[in-house]
Amino acid sequence: MTMPGRPGTEPRQVERTGRKRAERQPATPALDQVACLCKALGHPFRVRLVAFLSGAPHGGAYVSELAPYLKRAQSMVSHHLSVLAQVGIIMSEQHGTWTWYQVVPERLSDLREQLSAFIATAVAPTAGG
Image (cartoon, rainbow, N blue to C red; front, side, top):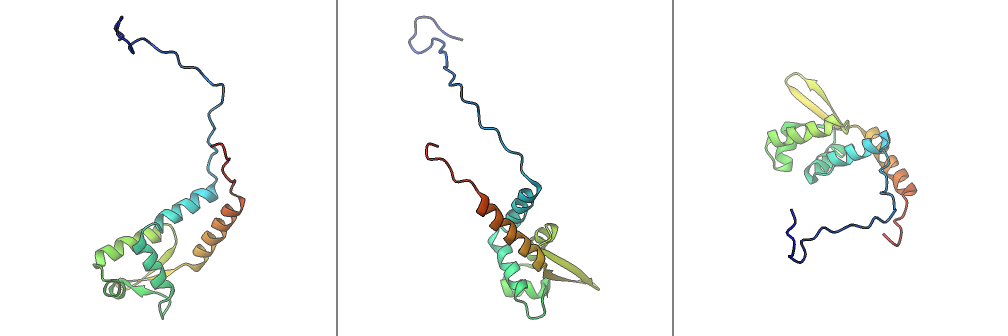
């Protein structure tokens, strides 16, 4: 509602520039997958888990081995392992009541290749904004 006679209360017309709003390109499945993997690796503790499991002497470890080494509660370690397992970065195997976790090297290799390809084909931003 405008009030006549008060400065600054009159309706203003906005000039349209004629430029079209940049249309969003739909994400490709590969980019969606890269984003999902990067999100899972976006927590420093998960990166530490992957690094530890990658260099584990027997190719993997149980949560009971990971928790004391990483100085975290088993429940926290299990939570982060499940996030990594959901995106396929690690895999698990049941051994009785124990679960063995190991990195899926092909998954990390695929991520590295996809990121390299994405960076190589990325378009540089324009100077004018």
